[in-house]
Length: 258
Image (cartoon, helix red, strand yellow):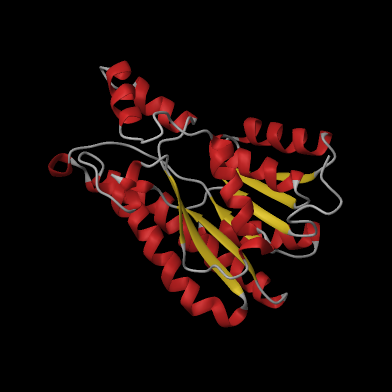
């Protein structure tokens, strides 16, 4: 059950990509620390399962089917959060996709799809949710970027560009919205044991060798787990990070230290 005096007690959070991986774990941990959570995703069954589990554990949660690249859908999510729980304090932009493709062979449609979800979706979410935060005196926006928003990787130009865009969008918004009390920070995970990473490995012809190669690039010698990223999300959502905005929280097992 959520603690009566949890780290985000009384706050209302919207978490995208909440049906699995980092989004689902962030929703669970925010609820455990006292937040009311609106979790969204395109995968309805899995998303509703996460929301029901939170409620069965004594938390407050609701699932909404949601395409983060749809501007009108974002307006509906922000309105639903306020209508259901009375306010909106936290936005976690966790929804995203990953894919690999050689830059010279990349179709424009594939580039645009990556940008529409990873970057446009973050922009639309921030713009839709910020007014409700400002109305109550401020809030915290946590944008999931990546280590590949900080360093490049061959074969992932569109993913790197989208996540690098999230990084700089975060910094610009942090400066613009600080006078309204809205903090905006980015999280940069290394390779994490999530369905997205598992799917990418399975699609490779040499999955075991690729996994070993990726693990070897992390100084700690392993992939991360979703809980380790969600803990960072809760920190940035809470008042414990009240003097942080425009910051990059890198949780990557030492990947970018090399």
